[in-house]
Image (cartoon, rainbow, N blue to C red):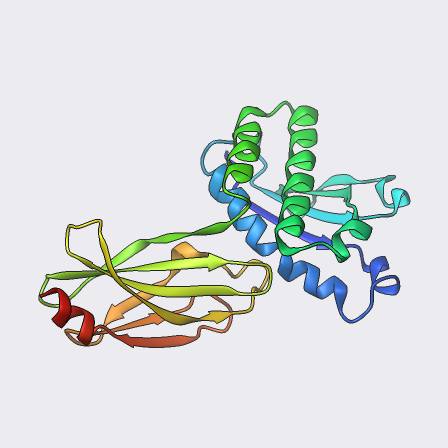
Length: 234
């Protein structure tokens, strides 16, 4: 079995120390890092029956007294508590926040891998790659859509930040790798567990119009028109 999912939330006790909905916002902030982490270890990290990590980040060492156990109703889910430097996180820039989350996630997963005798090399490689790409979570989603006349193809590009998941429709000639035109579709607020960018749904409405439905809890719908770009490149 491979590790396929991760969720992270902050300890509820932090709500007294950090106000204005910090705990709920942190649950949204971590989503871009979770998606990046899972992308980098996809089908690489073999576990002994564990497919999901459910992590609680805390700054209280007392929370670590009984910090890991398997969910009795979901034996393939490993629940674990881990120390996180929230004092450093609160005032950090976005890039540093991503680095802090990714580093803590990798450190925690490596600790668990050693405890349960899982392979750690995929985690080492993910750590190096994440640093090389500055912890940015972006790229084209796997599905693409061919126009009704089979001359054009649309790929959807995503850019996943701490506060928003943004989407762009990108026009290509069919069977070409050269992007001809990019149009902004829209953005959604991350919702934990509901940001599977690979599950985007799109379709051509006509020979020039493309529609996308966001892969999120709110299922937003966007339409763009490539008329000018198609005329320019025909």
